[in-house]
Amino acid sequence: MLERNHVLSPILEDLHARLDDAAAEHDGVARRRPFVTIAYAQSLDGSIAGPGRRPLSLSGPSSLELTHELRAAHDAILVGIGTVLSDNPLLNVRLVSGSDPQPIVVDSRLRLPEEAHLMEIGRGTWLAVTPDADEQDEKRVRARGAEVLRMPALENGWVDLEALMRSLSERGLRHLLVEGGARILTSFLKARLADYVVITISPRFVGGVPALCENELSPFPHLRSWETERVGDDLIMAGDLAWPDADRNEE
Image (cartoon, rainbow, N blue to C red; front, side):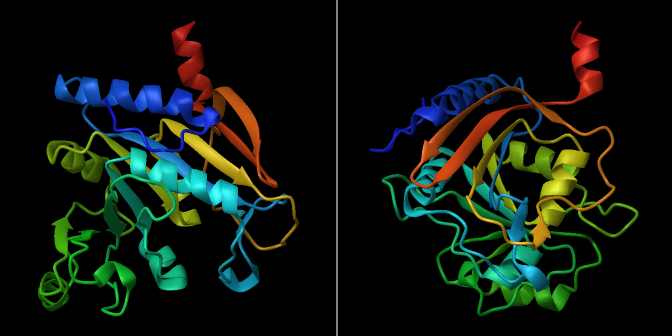
């Protein structure tokens, strides 16, 4: 069973149960990849960043605490290099009790700067790169305590996420939290590697960068079961993901 934090948001009770199930399945060698939760905050118009990709603080204090509860409940947390370059996140647990998840960055060409918070000594960040990543850059980040995971590349030069998920499962990761950005969110959904989603909706319009890249998802996934809860000034929507053709196959 997962260790519970002193905060247990009611809307996350279903997810916590699914994470427990995923851990049991992994221990029984029934899963070939971690259980993947996608989580992000957006404005009313679906923006996750401001115009020009300017970073935004969309979550209120209460929903931000919920985000940290999510982090503490997962074995690892993953973002793309674009998020690191624009936001320089910590990706740790500060607002609830619990352990920090293992930080993972999808960084095909190994562009992670040494001044990034995730490069602080002791963080032990895992960097998923392609075979084309420079060996000198690999030595540079390894000297700072990072671990480089060389994954197969797709035709477009990006990291093969399916191969990465298999590798993470082999390393013992039972569940993974994916926090973005738009490129990573779209890629996980396109590859059908996501199981659950938790979206924080801030009650304001932004007119910025949408959560998903245009014209890349067909068919679009939907929430098979879901619930909502007001947390502070924000609305939280959470549920399990499904795709239309998968639903038809189950009939």
